[in-house]
Length: 322
Image 1 (cartoon, helix red, strand yellow):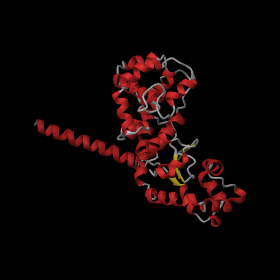
Image 2 (image 1 turned 60 degrees about the vertical axis):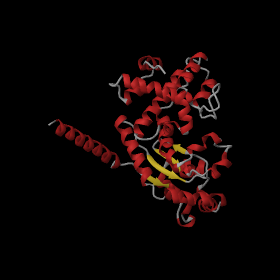
Image 3 (image 1 turned 45 degrees about the horizontal axis):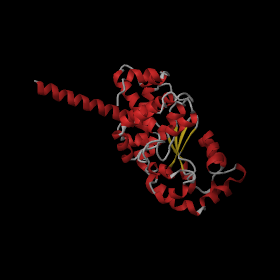
Image 4 (image 1 turned 180 degrees about the vertical axis):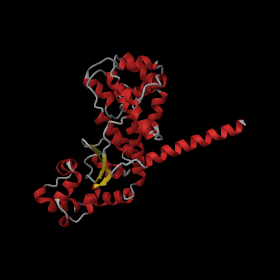
């Protein structure tokens, strides 16, 4: 009898997970392929066609990403398409992402969970674009744009872009980081950080990483953080030392924004720590604290978590002890 009950529970759990999977797969996330403009006939399309199709995002793209003025649209697009430096990367974009179904599935599943957590929040339209290595992602009021050439994993392309994207960021320009980087950008736009104390910002970004981890479901923690595997391993092995450093340096309650940025923004390593440390190590610490808080306060939803503005309360209630 016990075996039958156990078997029934396993089947029920399987059906429940299958149901959730199907619901997320069928979630209506719209994807538009603006990257196809690179191979469009410049003299058989018009500026207005794209403006009508893409709305405000087209304004951003045609003015700030690739300069395509309305008065000389055909000639400008033709010049863009003939740029020799773009021919091979665009071919690689086609080879890598012409079938966008896998990425669409991951994005749909993530925004399905995002919608469950924040039902009153807008779900963006995804626009993939080819931007000549100018932008990784672009967030507007209703659109999440993804620059596909920034996720080719070909370091030969990115080695010449260190003036825009420092070398310590290049490991993120691989296909497996695409969904995490894009959705992280959307979350940071939807939940902008206040320039408050170190602790406040650490917890705020920790909330975003916590949510991102829940929305992406099965992404490795280093992908969520934008770290390499080696950087994540260093953090895990150094958790106590990191926490001790933050306390001893009196960082938690500092409101020096210049100092705070050194630990919250991408960097080759975290100031005052070994060269093996990644930048943004404080955000990883904030994620750990938020994770502990949610484990110890299981009644709190993700939506309610984002409404708690008292970072000290979250730290206290987390009972965090590395």
